[in-house]
Length: 186
Image (tube, rainbow, N blue to C red; front, side, top):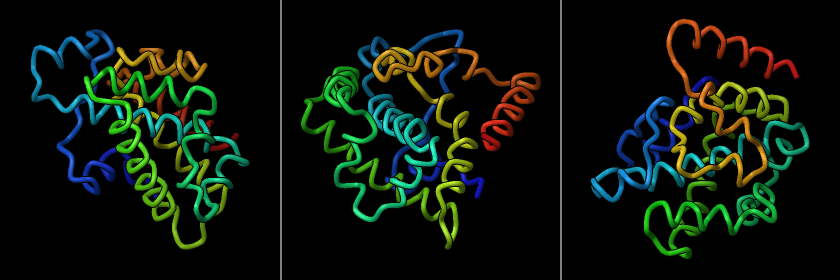
């Protein structure tokens, strides 16, 4: 059940490996303009969707919704509510892409992510298993979040943009271990 959802989506969608974002040296749209061969637009789209799924599926009610057949058809509305358009605009601006193609890409990502989550939690998925799985994925998701998106501001959760969530190393690894452990218990 500990499959890394970011890696699973990269493989499923045939995407190159995403870069971890160093919390001490923000990178983003400026780098896209300097080096247009980076994969940061797709990375931003994938991670934005995963942050939405993580936040929504962290409650038992949201996790139960993620198990509902056909949820993929109106998932964005549930994940981002009134902020859906602003989020898609931010990702499309980030990659200098148009709104409609970005929205379509993010819908495909959401559908595949839900499929991966359901598969990862096993043959008898329950809301509690979804909540637990997503809690264990938090760090995998946040270390790839481009800071220029300011996603936390868009979804009213400043902890998403907190750089301490993206730190790695022996001490940070221990802190993230306990963070995941306590997140699974709640």
